[in-house]
Length: 114
Length: 114
Image (tube, rainbow over all chains, first blue to last red; front, side):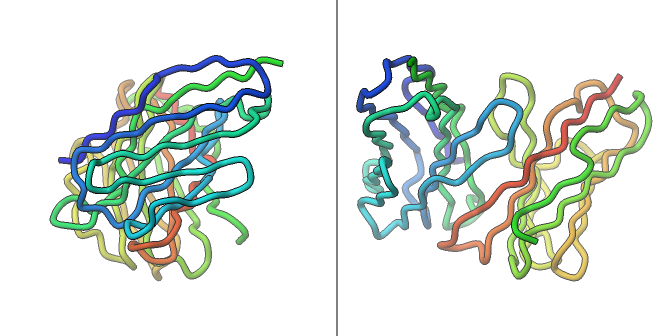
C-alpha cells in the first residue's frame, strides 16, 4: 500500500525566501507524481506533473524534482510571495496491481509573511 | 466545460436522508476519481472510473456509498442513510487518461449532516 509523507507539516517564512518542500513515498512503482496547492475551502490546483522517466519539471518560480528509486520528490519555490500561502500536496500515481490511484500526503501548510 | 464542475457546492442534510453528489468532468477525460477530505484529514480515495467502469470499489467506506458514471461523462456519488461521520468535502477529479496525464480537481461539495 502506497504511503506518502510530507515534511515539514507547516512552514512559515518571510517574503522573498527560497524554500523546499519534501515528499517521500514508499512504493516506487509509479507513473508520475503531481504537486497541488489547496487554498482554504477550495479544491486542488495542479502545479506540476513529473513523469516517472523525468527528474525535474519547472513552471515559473516552481521547480519539482523526482528521485523515483529512492521514493522522494521535492518542490522548490523561489522568491516566495504572500500569494504562495496555501497547503501544498504531493500525489504519486500508482502503476500496478491495486496501486492505481493518486495517493496523497497530508500536505505542508505554507505561510509567507509580508 | 473549462474545468471539472461539481454540484451542489454545499449540501446540508438531516441524518438518515439520502444525498446525491454530481461531478461533470472535463470533456473527453476518460478517467474520473472521487476523494473525500474530512476536517483536518488528508484526502481519502473513494473510487476510480475508467470510462463507465469502476475497476475497484473497495475505497468506498461502507455499502451506504455507491457511485456510477454514464456515457463516459457525468458521475454521481450517492450516500444513503447519511450519518454525521459522512460530513466532509467530496472532491472529484478527471484526467485525459489514467496514465501519464495531469489530474484536474473540481471545487468540491461540502456535505454537512446534522
